[in-house]
Image 1 (tube, one colour):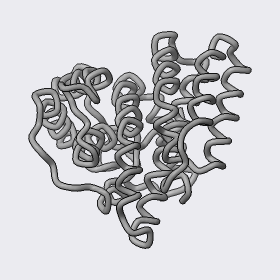
Image 2: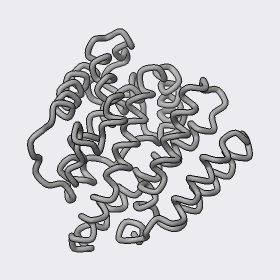
Image 3: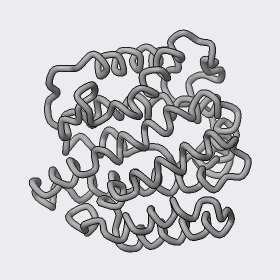
Length: 252
């Protein structure tokens, strides 16, 4: 599996983020369990062996992200504009990067490192699947708030940050489509990825420029051609991308 499902970097969001307000119980649980697992997995590439699916910190965090798949945007886990972006989306992205980077600390950037990360994606699929989906969903849900912030900030200070956010959103959208088109996945995971990209494509598209939107539509067509059973969801993806507004992020 390609490792493009990583979200916008914390550095890219730094210019966009404001202070954080109070937390609901579900938000606090996600933050707490995320911090515990982050401490255990360490910095990307530092550790060669990652916590298994029976690890209590892993299980607690995955339970929190699983709940977040439906709780995000509700009173249980409210979206508070940019205040909630880093808090709610950051933990899953950091944990996923750590799993994908396991044992790569001494490997230089390039084809060898990319191959090692892809191998880790296969090795740790059971552990990273739900956090990956949650991370992508969390990014998509927040794109309207990021767009609003981009409109309110001076362009000259925001261009670099907006490009990184745009690249992260594009990587997650295309990554979900790649998962949706992966014949090696079991039916349950395949269907979860399909349903998620169909539901979130419009929000992702807010951040995408016209060329990226065309690439998403072309990839959706390729998925539908490879598996006729996905045509309905892929048509939803294309329709949502086509009608998404093109504002500051789209125009970068």
